[in-house]
Amino acid sequence: MADVKVEINYKPEIKGGTSVEITSWINQETEVICEVEGVPVPEITWSRDGTVTSSIQFRSRISTIKFTPQEAKDFGDYVCKGKNVLGAAKKTITVKQLVSRSRSTRNSAN
Image (cartoon, rainbow, N blue to C red):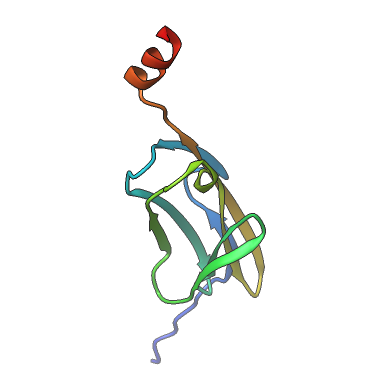
């Protein structure tokens, strides 16, 4: 008797919700993570302001980008998109700038 292997294909699904908010601050290494399930394994792309910043296609279903915000414009929405032949799914990670309490207190005291 021969062995039979059945693989069920399905479109990408984002794990952990389709949007999330994190905080960081200037000069703080920041990591955003996206986990996408699907068969065949989805290609994962990251974009910011509509421009693709990286594209990954390998056996891992988790993609991470790390960056260190240098100025206010580095904060905002980062979009992770998982795509395979059956469809696509995306997740928006909003990186909000955290302002130091002592700094804002000092500024309001002046």
